Amino acid sequence: MSDEPGTTVAPTASRRSYGLSVVGGIAAGGLTFWAATRTWAAVTVRTPGLPTDQVAVDGRAAVPLVAALALVVMAGSVAVLASRGRVRVAVGVVVLLASLGAAIAVVTGGGSITSALVDALGQSPAMAGDRGTQLRLAADADATVWRWVALLGALVGLAVGVLVARNARRWPVMGGRYENPATQADEAARPASDASDADLWKALDRGEDPTT
Image (tube, rainbow, N blue to C red):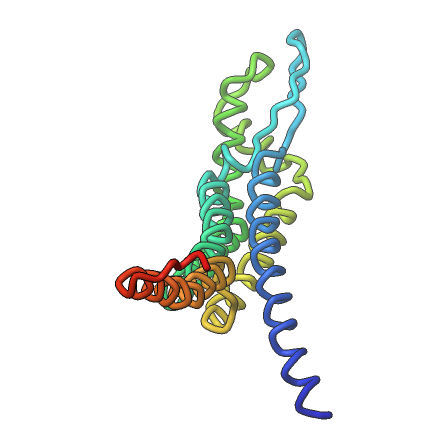
């Protein structure tokens, strides 16, 4: 009684973690990329005699590495489906490293956000001050939550990468699941077909009518 549940539950749990890892990796990469396309910092420029301007920068402009690594995480998560063995372990490591790099880029990207905002302020039609004024405005800019949403996605991707690297060898293989049964059926059917052909020729050699 105790052996049967263990034999049944282990493969089921393995398939569940396999599916969750693939879906979770794609979702994590997608969330990080989408968050990188949102506004990460914004400031309103008001200069007497000039129109008011809202200057904003998104994650791709401020820290482009985040969006690029998010695409790597998504591609790697899809590659888990088509890989096996050591290759799948390597894919898990790639997802892990890409997610880690994205997380580090988000956390340390404050200076890049400020620089991107200063550049955007320099192109604003409402900006009449010098670079010192632009730096002051950039430092006082309103930060949004999207930067930290990108960090959340990167951390989820990091967890997925660890899970793939640790369990890749125990997960089912797409080719083995869908191709092997057909191959085994063909191999099982082939000897019977060969035997019937041999009997047919022997009957003809003896002058017998094989249809009877």
